[in-house]
Every structure is written in C-alpha cells, then in structure tokens.
Image (tube, rainbow, N blue to C red; front, side, top):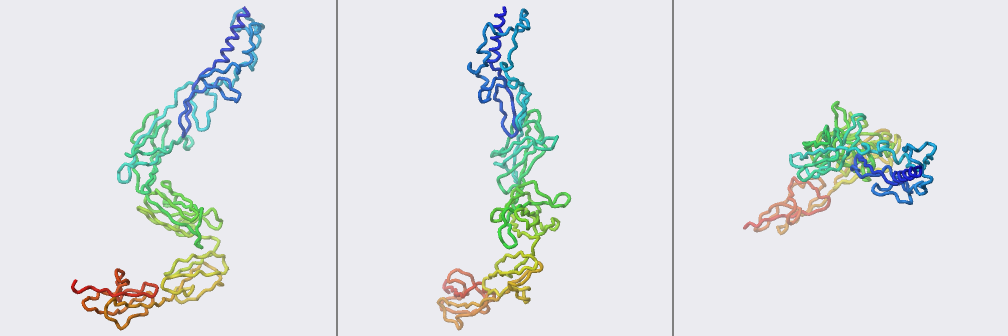
Length: 472
C-alpha cells in the first residue's frame, strides 16, 4: 500500500509542477492601448527569469530534480490516505515546490506605472467614447483640427488620463474612444492661424457608453509677432515672450487660449499664434542676461504702466527694445534719416564713438542736444542721465536739366535746386504740330513734374518735355 501511495503521490507532484496553469489579466495604461494578452503567472521561470508562454509546458530537462529522481521506494505517501501515518511521510523539500512569488494571485502584484489592474480573471475595464462636430467661425465644418481629451482626478485636481492627437474628418466630425468613466476637458487646436485654440469642459463619460453632441465652434484667431533687440540694436535670443490679457479684476494676466508663449530665436524673432481677438500687452523675460529685469511692452517694469494694443484679426507686429535697469540709455533721433541704434552706458561713462546718420538728399552735420540749435556733442561727452541727441542736416543741391524732346530750345536749359524744395516756375516749350503736355521724369512714362512738385531725386537729373500730335 505504501508503494501505491508513493506512486500516486509522485504522479501528482509531476502533474502539479509540470503543467502550467493559465490565467489572464487586463491592464489599461493611461495614454496607451489596453493590453489583453494572457500571461502565465504561475509557471516556473526559465534561466533568464522569464516565464514560458502559457500554451507551452516546461521541457523535461527544466523540471525540478525531485521529479527526475522520484522512485516507488522513496516517493512520499499521500497524506490523504487513511493508512498513511505522519511519520511514514517524508517532508517535501521547499525547493521542490513552485516559488511563492510564481503562484501569487494577480491582485497581489503591483500594477506598473500609469496602469490600472482589475484583478485575476475579471472582465476588461469598460471604456466609453466622446463624439462631436467642430465648425469654424463661419459655421462651416473644420477639418484637420487636433483634439486632446483629459480627465481630472477629483481627489487631487490633477489630470490622470490623457488622449491626444485625434483629428477631425473632412465634415468636422470626430470620435475619441477608449475613455474610462469620468469628467473630461476637450482641447481644440486648429491648423489654420485664422482660428483660435479653444476648450470645452465638463464632458462626462459614464458606464462605458457613448457621449454624443460634444460639438465646438472655433473663434477667429489672431497672431502677434515681432523682433526683440537690446537697446544697442543687437538681436536678443532666448527671450521669453508672454501674451497678457486683463482678467476680471482688471489685472494683466497670462493667456490660456492659444500659443501665448514663445522664446526668441537667434535673430530675436518670436510668434504668438491662435490667440483670440482682443486687447493685449506683452511681457518679456530675458533670463539669459542678469542685466535685464522682467519688463512689459511700452518699456516699463510695472505691468500697470504697460502699453496695450487691440487686434481684431490678422497679424500684429510688435517689435521691442529691451530696457537695461543697470545702465543709462542714450537715444539718437535721426530726424528723418535712417534709424540709429542707441547706447546703454554706466553713469559717468563717456559716450565714445558716435554713430553716423544717413538721409537721402542731405549731408549729416552731427549730433546735437536739440533738434535745431543746441550744442554739438563729441565722443568725450559724459552721460549722467537718460538722454536723446538729435541729427541736424543740410539739404544737398542738384542740377536739373530740361530736355525739350524735339521742341524748340528754351532760354534756361538747367536749374539748380535743393533736395526737398519745389521745382518752381517751369518753362513751356513749343513744337510745330504738337501740343505741350508737361515735363516728365522719363521720355515715356515716368512721373509728371509741376511747379509745386518737390525735388525727390537725390542726384543730378533730367526732365523731358511730353508732346501730343495736334491731329490726333
């Protein structure tokens, strides 16, 4: 009888240790697809520590040594037999049984990051969907709009589930699937800069069902762009630019809708797009330099003194010169000439090399303390406060030649005039068979010049008589 019991016991041991038990788990990772592949959690691990697939049995050579050496004589008796006594049954060594961690139930295993485990042999996690249609500002279907859906955790107020990259179809429709129950916020990102980004809150998914009618109408969008430079005129890279709007308390605040934040590129350029229409100001933060404090459009350090602008459509260009709080600013007013960059200097420093101003038709006389009159400054001028210097000019004189273009000669063939002055009284030549039509800047085409016309050609030039055949 003992031999019989031993044989039965050995067979049971072989069966229990060699036959894998199949089980299945359903894991849902936030932001990823549901994984439903069955995995054998009880089969012994291979040499690398990985469990063999559920549909395969462990090879005979991988079976525990106890199974290979069991005999009728030394096989332990089945404790369930009435004739077997406790002293007759040798204890089963601990190493011959399946490790405890391999037989642990699924619910005891901690789920991976951003996963929800629902237990051994339970049903898959129910998920629902949200459907709707997106239209543009004119009411037409909006195709190619990107949609994100985010669920908020009511316990901590943080987003705990997020689906992104859904696109609207040609008819503006969309469907977001695989959503666990909860309350969602939908974000809409149109590709056309003529529309603003937007969001819809409070969309509820319940019982794994479909939530239809989550429609959305896009609003007109605007763009703000510009170039940021230092006061000396150099491009300022890596400057953070923020679009601000006034909140309900009348205070300038950050904008949540649209691409309201940008960092200037190597040429100092920035673009803020997909914003709603309205009144804005800008905030500039130059973290790459300790010489500049946070400042606002209008070159001020106080938001309440910021200069604002309204934009109802299209693009607004808003260039900006950074203000250096630790230095004095010297501004050069070119008085009609090309713009000249200023200088930032420490108090008491000499102004140094002065910039050269240029203006078509004029000779530059230098920089002065006043627009007219005043004192001419030199490079040794010491700066003690923020100050502006003005360019003064002398108009150039040019010779104007009159070409009668086939007509009879006129007494004065040339005339000396200053740039910007009126041409004054002009001769009226004659030609037999023709009517004089006036003086022009070209033989054919060109611009007609009258006595009131001002000299705008910054060089010696010729005017041509224009004629019309009397018989025409």
